[in-house]
Amino acid sequence: MKYTEIRDFSRKMRKNQTPYEKILWDRLRNRQLDGLKFLRQHPILFDRKGNDFNFFILDFYCAEARLAIEIDGEIHDRQVEYDLWRQHILEVMKIKFLRFRNQELEQIETVIEKICDYLKSWQWLEKE
Image (tube, rainbow, N blue to C red; front, side, top):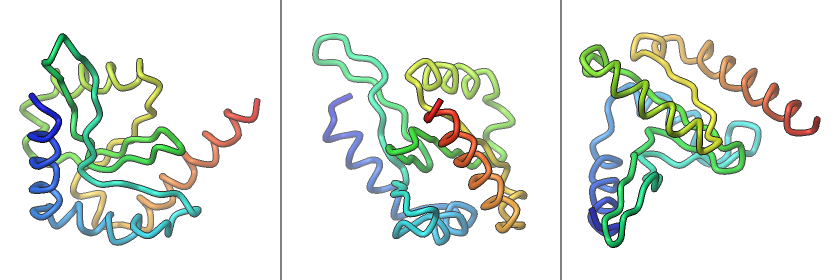
């Protein structure tokens, strides 16, 4: 897939976010969380063979922390193996991963706490 195609697809996904993605985005946008910049529906290149590029699109991504946050709806119940494969590849690329179910977003403060706790542990590990 060409970068322009994946870029356009990502833009389309940003315009059509799920209600649960919107809940989290409202709390991550504009560096509200520890001053970190988060992107939504962000393409990450994971493989290239000649002119053929393969991307994953992350629900939310913070480059500074190398953190991906995924919001799992019902479709993820049917693609568990794919999600695990995808997460493994991203972790090999040194991208940390947090995954939340849609229902967890109904308690947004708990989700934000979990993200902050994770970021604090990440910052501590990076200084070691």
